[in-house]
Length: 428
Image (cartoon, rainbow, N blue to C red; front, side):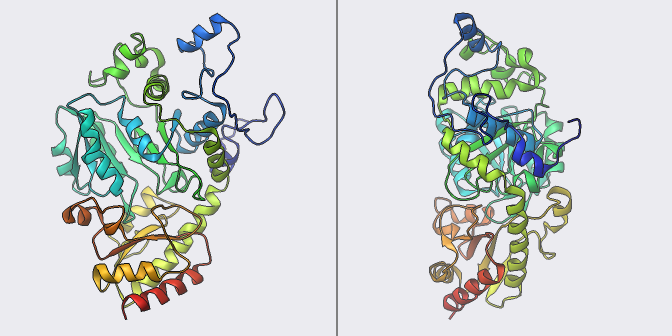
């Protein structure tokens, strides 16, 4: 077909063809470690990246490759690499870009685990992060120095549901000659396609909305194929002879696919953060209904956020889909299909009231996750953002008086009734 396929079609068909050996219509789970080479020359061509194929499942696997191709198609990228978790995806995104002494400029409004990973763990690699409020573009640009190698943000920030002005941030990244990495977990490519707004790389925790049912941990990095890795001399792993792969210059040899191939041939080979084929299979199944689920997630979130905003027991609601949100004006431009289904609200009564609310809910599950078909709740200040200082918690949108909701696809009136009875207990 010459026609450009729509999202609803791609989410079912991209990366999937009937199995040539059996005719199986669904992508099989290729539960194998290794693959037989045709002969010695075939093996050498695979290891030289002269031919695309399968060597060892730490690097590539047909089930995992189908998932990578599908998500790349949905995001509008040239390629993708799947890995073991969303956190692994963030390290995989940075790995070809960074050297000891280099830094990444990151948004203050991020998932608490990302702030921890960037603020502390990556220092063990000799990397560092500078956290800046991305609503202050002058501060973002001022944070960039000669050792900065990437700019990192979330499209819809966890936990508050704040929408980043990706157009403005990508224009800044272009001006300073750096790749923009966007975590699109909360939005999914159905609500936002960061590459269309100038992102270089898109990362996902496939654990969340892509799979959608709380059964998998997985991560994906999508490559736009548009960044010139050779322009500045700052990215030797991609645009100079790479000693970790017998001196190959990935960008010179592979052009727009340089990042994807490096992430597989070097990143997965040496870091080993591999997605298992069964997890990839579950995620492929989940993606088949992504648009249907996201429509219901967004509709429910809008109804519930509007109800909470009017409730006298609630101090404020952060959902960007509300007209009262300072981020509402960005919805139509950045997330034209809706503002997502993740947001926070502040309970009158503070920390103690939040704890009582969480304990009083019956339909909402109290878990450290989001993006499930089930509605989820967590008090971020005592859990996901607990390791942060009070100042960092407030900056991230996870103040002590705030509860985070991930709205599922149940009946919205049932969810409102559950919140109503829990609020009554929490504020009695």
